[in-house]
Length: 345
Ligand code: NAD
Image 1 (cartoon, rainbow, N blue to C red):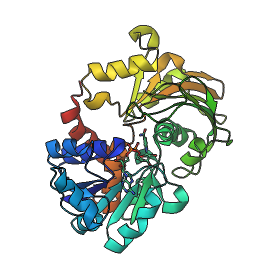
Image 2 (cartoon, rainbow, N blue to C red):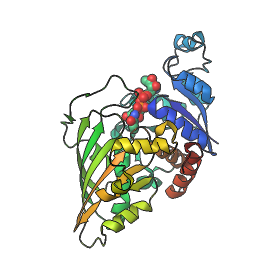
Image 3 (cartoon, helix red, strand yellow):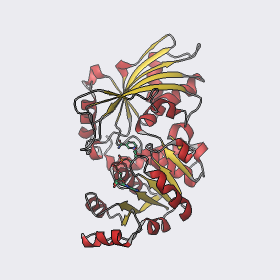
């Protein structure tokens, strides 16, 4: 059994913990909280040992004072783990790296950290093999994971690919109360945005740029993608759809036939089929929004930001621990185990 620690039991951390718990080759040895607050009760209900993010004795003691059993500080947790999944807020993780290295555990950061900090990034379909047995990596952001899901198989078919895309980003997660905008459209003025170029950290052969705007919605991101395929690609609109239908973690549906024409309806669909937290690990592509005209491919895809990276973290654990060299085998194993709790119909 691979012993997994979760450092940062928030939006991503609690979901990764349950996905780890569902697998038969790994187990949760503990999760950290900064203080005895919201979130500790969930860990108690799940039976995950709680540790304090810090090693300070007064901070650890605060948990017992609030009625929670705390098993120690981060150093104690790292002492019983093989690998730590850092799910701390973006840009905070960098300060934890030295602790992981000193403890001699493997580590996985999330997309809020920079590739330069980790020197290695990960998505299941793009570069599982390159991550085999390395000490640490970064599972790229939800947007970059989503781009990788549909673009990597396209690249493998075409042999070259040049992409321009616009990220229409949710302003905040549903549980956030401090972010915005709430009544404006906010362009990301750093051009190009990091999302597209970040794909090149896992698949450098794909030439890609992106721009991004944040809009007042909390439930999903939307991508508007225009890809230039090389001459002689041999594809048409239907065969592109067919290609994606045969890839894991992509859902294709016709808006016209299903009535699912907005991100609100996509999320309602996820709730209807009984997904835990209403999550949708898959990337949602509208069949009737895909069009290949000569060498130019147009499509939309919707990304459930809180959950598409969750199964990728599980595959990344297997890559780093060197226990499954075949990414498709890992994906199948991860998704089958998650399906048991996720009620996949
Ligand atoms: P979050 O704020 O919901 O959770 C972060 C947790 O880490 C909180 O429980 C917080 O108390 C804890 N924490 C604070 N300081 C810490 C420290 N020094 N060490 C360890 N833990 C600490 O954040 P999140 O949305 O879960 O994001 C976590 C990471 O995942 C970020 O890198 C983010 O960019 C990335 N990510 C987030 C989303 C998303 O939509 N939420 C999607 C993909 C990737």
